Image 1 (cartoon, rainbow, N blue to C red):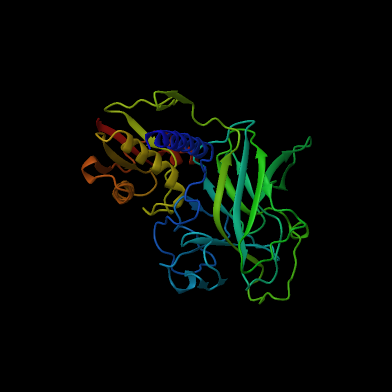
Image 2: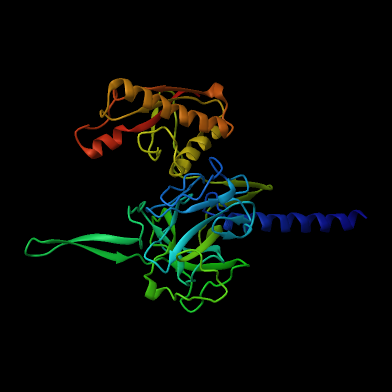
Length: 390
């Protein structure tokens, strides 16, 4: 009996180790990949609104993407909602976007867990399902990876507007379509209104890509627009539900594993050092205009702070809100306090003890840049944290 147990234990340890290594290789680089985490429940479909409910996801253009969750209002519930009927691919939530037929387009965007590494091969995928209320269907949905956060105020095809200066001094703005790294093939239209269809592909990163945008980046004539007879043709275009977004590096060595007496050591380069009195600006904290409502774009930066607080359980911090010089001193002070409090409340909701946090507002009294320029005012509108104890 003893002789039989040893081989079984060895086999279990060996296979368990392989599973662990496989998990290291397949780390999903997408936050909130199934859209389950949300700031609050969606209430209705807003034709000119902003998708602000989903953590880590937002719309980069004026096109109003939609969020669906069972906790939401009647228009946004599942499986039946205002724009169709569908269950989530996994979990309880999903999002939806218009893609073609008219010039109107919608997109969703997120920030990756880490920047892509130059020369490495990545595999990207997401699932879509066509709403039966659509007028038509397209093929060319895809994912675009960019180094910078890209935005556009229009509600049409997402283009890269570049200004060209000619020799005669005339400046001209030229709109070029973005070329997504992964796109569904033109000859394979996404027609299914019942089952979910997977869009996937592999690509080599140029390096530094940090943001992902999903949608249809091609004009109508390049999208393989079709009009199946089974569609109810209620909506003015092709409308798709989206779920389960995944991005894996196929060639990266994310962790250096050293085997020594059954101990696994993970090496970490350039680990930041923290000390009492240090002040750190939260670079990417976004609020609704002139309000203290946190936007989903703030998710990544806030979770970096949460990770720091979890790694240093004895650290206590003071959050401080700041504004630019526009507006009265009284108003700016109130707004800065509310914004610092919004970050405080978010951290508490995510499990950080209130005892480790304090918050203050300073209005426009502590500028770090020139308030006479747009760039300076943008830098002055900020939230910081100061390390009080370690």
